[in-house]
Length: 333
Image (cartoon, rainbow, N blue to C red; front, side):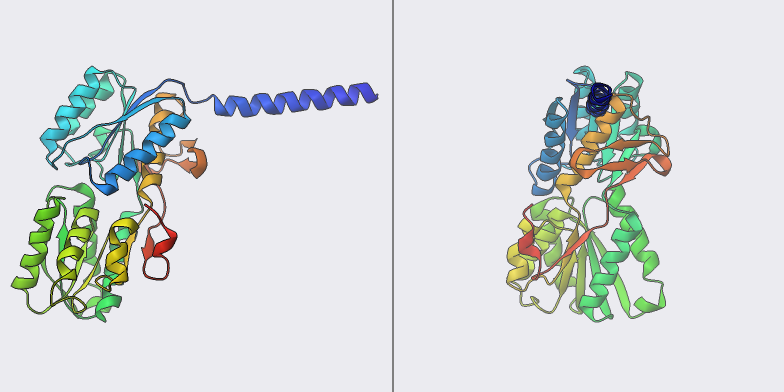
């Protein structure tokens, strides 16, 4: 009886180990996955790329990050075509345009290459899964709510966006405009939407222009990491420092000095490294035939745990964090 009990325990343990091994082995090894950000060599996308490459390494895949030095859709199309020719198993990209990239991405999918978008989406027919950093209405409403708090609920403000065709930016701005129709924001007036094209110097110049053109300006929202850092840099040496409330979406490492010198009181963002990490795992799940991108599909993304695919192939990373003097030194990205 004792021997049989020991044998059963051993069999149970073996079965458990085998089951765990099966879970670990559901992702194919040696997958070729390419990260394609909107623009290379800016801190935000360097961080998303590094998160993606970390995930690909964990999965035993072959990862690389490539991309244009400008925010044009045609530049991304060129890279997509090259990745198709290289027969990548998956392309993970942040789109510079919702529609212009679709023909190339459809060609990639027709050849068996899986396509995952993150940060900024394309039309649904151009990819299988979109990794959204947070719910779009949550981001947009959170930005308006934060600026309203900083401005005391009244005054003129402007938006300093990225490119005019950026899907995520335009979605957020539309929601912000709708939000402003609510009674709570009746004393706030959006006077201008400016575009810095995710270029540091262009964003710097646009911020300068906003302060000159609107002498009564009380606030600026820049929902782009390049824009908010460039705007803060201009504001930090301007007589308007402390008078114009600047917020937006930025990384703690970019914004730390501006928080500490009082240029900026608070801003928001999700963890971009986790965004890239989750997107790479989604790509691997597709390429390993774990999921197809249909609503209800589930997959496990390493340290981030289990995720479920929602409507139209959307997967949401999670809510953004508000950073200020009290917590900014707790973050390093």
